[in-house]
Image (cartoon, rainbow, N blue to C red):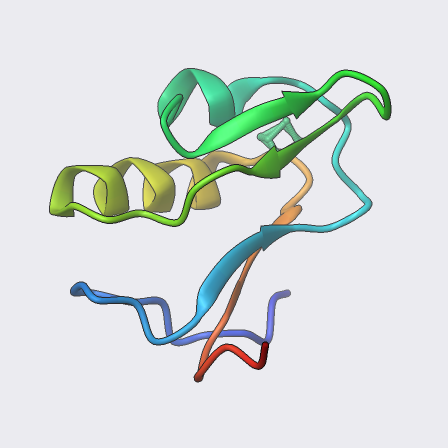
Length: 82
Ligand code: SF4
């Protein structure tokens, strides 16, 4: 069970989506949100290539979040520390 909730309902994001190391490279997230998830071919995993910037992208990313078979997509709420 994830502890990074609540998920964003609106843009702009106040946190960020990430994929953790439990990803099994099933490619489902890329199928659902190709603008936001890409394959890391060197490491046989996927990663978040772009945070959602439009309501449509956010909807697709949330669909991927809910659909990931290993719950590898996480949302880290709160301001990003750079
Ligand atoms: S849906 Fe989940 S397991 Fe599948 S590639 Fe994306 S992050 Fe990895």
